Amino acid sequence: MTAKDPSPPLQLGTSSNPLDKFTDSYILFQETTRKYREAYEQLEEQFESLTIKLEDTNIDLQKRVEERDRVTNYLNNILDSMSGGVLVVDLNGDITHFNQEAEDVTGFKPSDVLGYPYTDTIGVSQDRGLTAMYTLESGERLINREKELKKADGNVIPLGFSTSLLRDEQGTILGAVEVFNDLTEVKRLEAEIQRVKTLAALGEMAATVAHEIRNPLGGIAGYAGMLERDLKADDPNRRLVGRITEGVGRLNRIVSSLLTYTRPLRLNTHPVNLVDVVEETLAFYAIDIERQRDDIEIHRDLPAKPLICDLDPEQLQQVILNLLQNATQAMAQGGKLTVKVYETDKNATFCIGDTGQGMNEEVLEKLFTPFFTTKEDGTGLGLVTSKKIIDAHVGEINVESEPNTGTQFFVTVPKKHTQ
Image 1 (tube, rainbow, N blue to C red):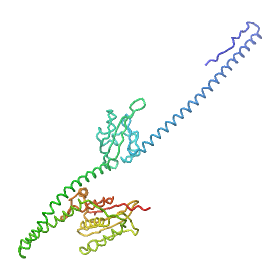
Image 2 (cartoon, one colour; image 1 turned 90 degrees about the vertical axis):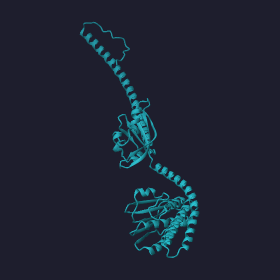
Image 3 (tube, rainbow, N blue to C red; image 1 turned 180 degrees about the horizontal axis):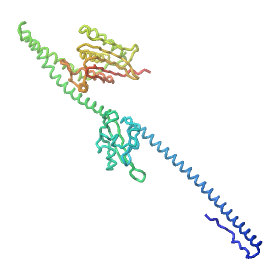
Image 4 (tube, rainbow, N blue to C red; image 1 turned 120 degrees about the horizontal axis):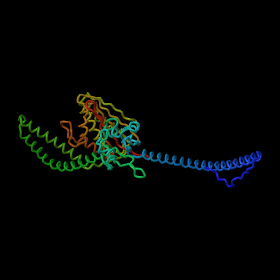
């Protein structure tokens, strides 16, 4: 940049005198020096102004960077706080974002997937048409779809998901986003609702059938009794009549159990110590089983502290007796019967376990289905009725079992709230 000189050009003499020439040169030097000084001062002023502008620009840029980082962190915190898993892939199909819920659902750590291709990690075992890659390639969004996901531990879970393209402010495609949730509990609840509907329909039908069967059964039993009285004591046909009577009796028990199951359940609840109910029921059962068998060892683990719950003691005793009978019947060669009561934060639980033959997955799935039984003389309604009673108490009944390792039933009911 060249400084402007406001002064007119200096006119020097043309004298040939050396002193005059020196004087002219000195004057020219002084004038030139003054011009350079003025130009330098102007440059200094301009440099200072530019420095101030640069500092202001740097401050503004720093503020923008800090604001961008703040917004980025804010958005990342939102993504990490979401109840659903979120992952983002770039245009190359590499995963660039993987929130906390995504880690919890899939079992993959961010270090396992970030920077790696989607198809080599999360999407390794999936139909490409059900992935974020399909949306990235076709531009088509996938809304509220379902698929199966193989987790990091190898387990497969049902997944609900949606995908869409990721764009910037100008609409340029940056990648694709996939949002997903674990549907395991949803599927369980759907199956439970369907089971309840099926059981309700079955119950209505069974109640009608039971009423229709009971009258003919009474007639058959009456005629069989009359026939037995007419036969002589040594008549071989008396044995056949006895079989008829036994069959009618068994059918009558099934009908009675069925009517009990289908009949609306009315609880007479009041504050009761669960420990006392379990202990008293077990004491009566132990007396009865000791008369029949000597190969059953009973182990009690009951707390001294009362566990007060709103219960119908008679109905709950029916559940306990049914589970005790099932446990001893499962130990045909003898074994150990364990009864334990304990509490959690809001619930009280009693566990009845055996060391018997156990059950496989197929049996466990059908365990609470009406008329399903593994016993020759069973009705298949004992556990169904027990579950109905526990459900009415707003409780839960669960089972853990494996073949040849025994079975444990866990019955949980809410503790009574105390002020």
